Image (cartoon, rainbow, N blue to C red; front, side):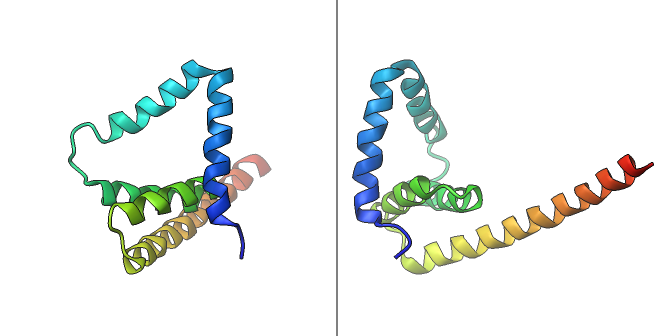
Length: 113
């Protein structure tokens, strides 16, 4: 097992509360982002969580993966939907690496002159 996901979520929640005590204004602003992203209900909760999983994978955030997978399950996401989401994340991340490889070569060519 890569991570003990069942233990990770309560640990994160506890740590989140601890940081919140140190910087309540920052945590309030962070929580407002979640509220703002769902304000108009254009996307349902499951879709938002699937998007969040894809972003969590491409940014390599274990805490985000755990939290958003848990929320996706609560929103009714199936294993197949999560697998399809992961396929998209892999495709996008490989694409991003390709584009940044082109940028690196451009930097080399520019700086070599």
